[in-house]
Image (tube, rainbow, N blue to C red):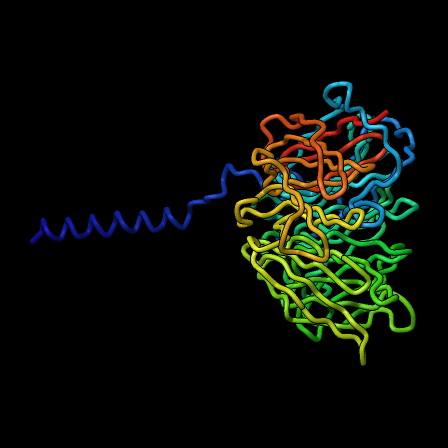
Length: 473
């Protein structure tokens, strides 16, 4: 009995000591008080996706101001969104391969360059810093002149950045980031002018593969289709970002990867947008500017990357990938504005495209057929607008381009395979002749970003590189 009592007392004493020690113990003893910056983490890296300060950081390089160039490529598909350089360009085809002038590494993405006064602007994403960045490079050397960037955490989804900046005649540069962050900067200095968050301002639902819509500048206005809860399209003052006009989203369209295209239909300047849920035309002039003129839900692919292409004064070609194929939209003013899809077919039954917007050149349409385009899949094909079902010419069986871009420069088609091979064709009447072939991006991958041209230089990119080659003196 005494032994049991002794054990009990010893046990009680032990646990009493443990409890007293536990209360007296200071776990913070020996620790250093946390101070901002003590962990060497770059500022802003803890920021959440809904707590973005657009354009908050700036870095300036040591390179001098570039030589001012003559040409501009101020945005998606060039000065008039046709993807055609019509003035004379003495291309150096007989002198061997085109000379590579410079190469710059990027984060994974497909955002392509724009050019203004000897400067190249490209939207980039840095995974280590979780940041969008507008980078300004010297056109001739590739040296970085400045970058304006901001924290926005994202996960890779076939890359990040996809959009091309838009530049005004006096050098204001506007970007739309992957998560819908709009930023306007001074193109020379990089000074931040204004910003806008499309998700916060308009309740925009960003597409699954991030924003692919390229901003449009018409006259002194920036046109964007946020396709938000209440607002479909807006015209913004480029100097201030203030809304000048807005189109109600009564049809409840959602944002696609397609871009707004300016057209003149039935003599009326019109902004055409293919959103998820339908296609619409919005007035771009007069007292009814911003008013929706017509709408059709006859074209509703689940994913749309290419933009609408005007074929005539009242016809628009519509195209999308993932099995959607192509379609012809007829617009008329009979008894008021009307729009109707008069022809629609699968990708293996006619002119189609998955990634790039086709080119209308001298009455013919040039496209690269998608992977589900039948026996001619991934080849360059020429169609006549009067017959969208039968190609009049196709590239050879070993000339397949995947999702690669193409553009016309002075009567020649420059086409880039998605693996980095560049092909040059002479465009004839309903046919083409191969003139030149060259690997411009060694071991290239996913070269999907549209090309740009300025001052004798061609700008190309794949998923992780932007390159500049000289094609003319």
